[in-house]
Image 1 (cartoon, rainbow, N blue to C red):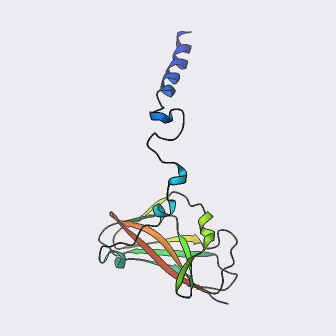
Image 2 (image 1 turned 60 degrees about the vertical axis):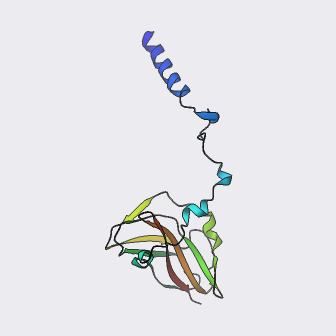
Image 3 (image 1 turned 30 degrees about the vertical axis):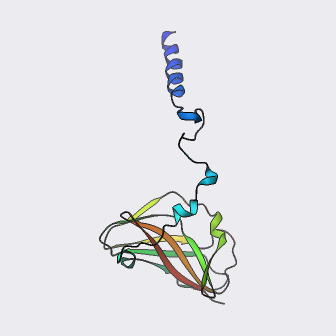
Length: 168
């Protein structure tokens, strides 16, 4: 009997002490903001680096560079780090369409979910990543497109881009 009470009292004590602040009993920490006020786009798309040379030292290319209309799909991104420090980045990327000199986002990627995987590339190294430019049905019009991917070089945000085109 004594052991049975121990197995009931200890877990109850542990669970009872888990709640903190005004949100006891919820899964939201007391100092968190609601999901409605978080700017997810700002977290996933860092601003270009202001550090001279860093953004020039890190490149991203896409293969193939040309797709036939109706055949846009799998592609390979190659990220090359010629900077002096390791770079890191996640899986998310966005695609934009060149609309007469203005880059308009391909809104399909607003609803794509990416895994929360962190990748890194050491100085002087390259790494390939497979991506899907057609994660859900989308009618790519003929023209020029670019892929955008946010990265970090130390504490400096870097915006990587690679262009591809869709022919007729």
